[in-house]
Image 1: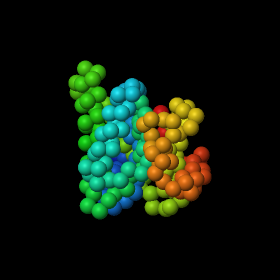
Image 2: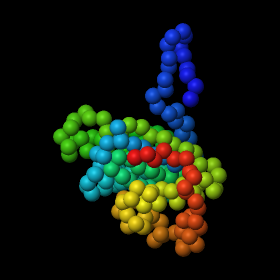
Image 3: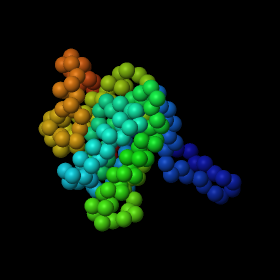
Image 4: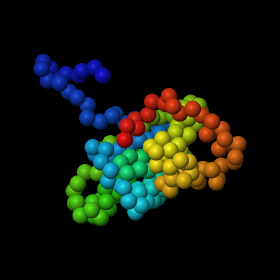
Length: 185
């Protein structure tokens, strides 16, 4: 990263990534809690995030193609549908609703829950397929389950039930070990 300045001696550091979201794209999104704190560590709070994600994606006309929700972050692959609203609005709504409810449950009003999100627009089929596999396999990568479809807050089981077997086999064949994805949680 190069240093930016606003005149002599004054350094300007960006505090968040620049989000360039368009409603007609396909994106991989990763979001994290503040300080990577494990705030969503119960079945109820993980379900809270997953249910809100599923509901709000329909409300904003974004098709979820893969997701995995964890105690301190989530990953998703999402596609804009015709007439979809800004993905940033969906994520802001998701973060506000889940933070408010978590803080109510923890009796911690006003606490900042979410830190930020990072997105990658997927424009190449191989990149898209590899990231679908990455999101589905993420619970295994984090050591939570031996097989991805055993993790309740991930789309792997749904994907395996609804996609044709050759599609599942193809997606799961994509290598994920060299992908550059923020996932140091």
